[in-house]
Each structure stands twice: as structure tokens, then as C-alpha cells.
Amino acid sequence: MKRKTRDRILDASLELFNADGESNVTTLQIADEIDISPGNLYYHFKSKSEIVTELYDRYEHEIQELLAVPEVEISVDDQWLFLHLLFETIARYRFLYQDLVNVLSRYPVLQPRFQRIVKQKYQATRRICASFREQGILSASDREVEALCHQIVLTLTYWLSFEMLSHLNQKDSVDLGRGVYQVMVLVAPYLRAEEREALEAMSEDYL
Image (tube, rainbow, N blue to C red; front, side):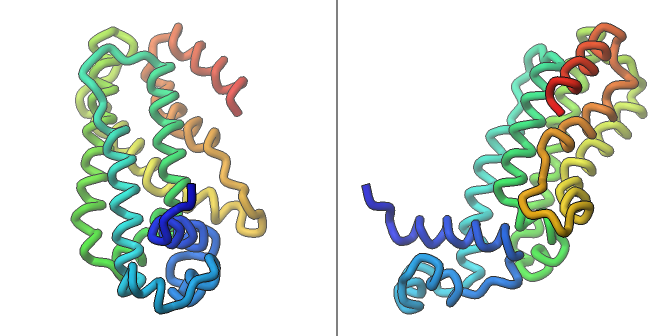
């Protein structure tokens, strides 16, 4: 089935933004990428900001589904999978994260929406840590848990930029496993010995 032109524009824009950076891509390049006229693109999107906003809508929908962590018992395996899926989503829309401050400066309408995402990341992380503590898996004071959650959110938000800066000359070098591992290393010192050993075993297989 032939894809709609609007979807092709969005998919091509996402690919170009991720590869070259949103600020370096024009609507003319996007139109050329999928072999349509600038007028045809303009029929669907009056400006690049409309494309960015719609891509953000997609990102927001996908990540909010992940961040809606249910209030159930959560295992270390569950957290590992949760983090992997989060990093997959972040990598899929990496143009937002690799130049976060500048993107939000150029599109101020996205600023409060991204702030809500950051808050939801924190709430999801708190819920996981609370489940760990209730099960006796994690041993930490309220202050330590708060600091831990902030460190996890910080890593989730800025790890991709760090990873890309560390491999400037290597295309497609982003390794999701490294991101997941960095977050779990933050959690590891607070875990019960059994879970810490399981985490170490998973790390060896995963990385």
C-alpha cells in the first residue's frame, strides 16, 4: 500500500534531522529527498516548524506510553527492559536530544511540553525505586532515592549527546546498551546482593 505523502514527508524529515541536525535541514532538502515539489510539501506543511511539531507529537505519544509505569511489583529485569525501550525511543528522535537546548530555543512552544516529559521521567523512576524498596530489593534513604532519581533522569536526557560527542567521527555509533548500563550502574550500589549479581551477569551478556 502506498504511503501518504504527509507520512513520507515526516519520515524523511526525521531521517534528515537525525543525520544532519534539524537546524541544517531545509524544506527544500526534504522535498528533494522524497522527490516532490516544494509546493507539494507546502500543501501539507506550511513551515519546517509544523514538521518539527508533528514529529514531536509522535515522540511525545511514544515516550509517554513508556513512562506510564504501572503500580505493580517491578523486577530488575523489568527496569532493564524499560530503560532499553526508553533509549530506543530517544534514539529514534535523537535530533531533539543531540541539540536539545537549541531546538527548544528555536521552538519555544515545545519547552513546556518537554519539561512535562522530564517530570514524567522522574515520576516513573520514583515509582520503580519505590517498588524496589517495598520488595526489599533496594536499600536507600528518601534523600538518596531522590538524588538517584535525578541522576537517572539527567543520564536519560543527556547521555545521547555525550555518546555522540564521544564518537564524532563514527557514523551510527550510538550504542543503546551503553546508555542502559550507565543508568543501571547508578542503581547498583543500592541493590540487594542477589539483584546486584544478577545485574552484573546481565551487563556481561548485554554489552
